[in-house]
Image (tube, rainbow, N blue to C red; front, side, top):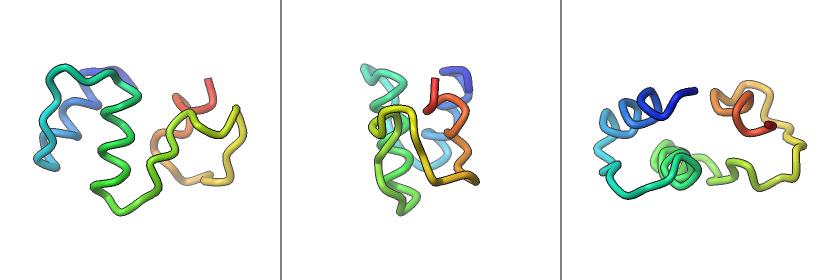
Amino acid sequence: MKMTEVQKKAKELGIKTEKLKKTELIRKIQTEEGNQPCFQMNGGSCDQVECCWRKDCLI
């Protein structure tokens, strides 16, 4: 997902996006949505097959 798409999703949730890296912003979104802020923290493995961040996370 491109940064502009991540920023749009964050703004929809009321999250301020300035000065945040993509990884930090995605983790804030995950937290706001009630999920674990685990983006790119599992060393390339993930059991959350339905997560919208999965493709970027496993890079």
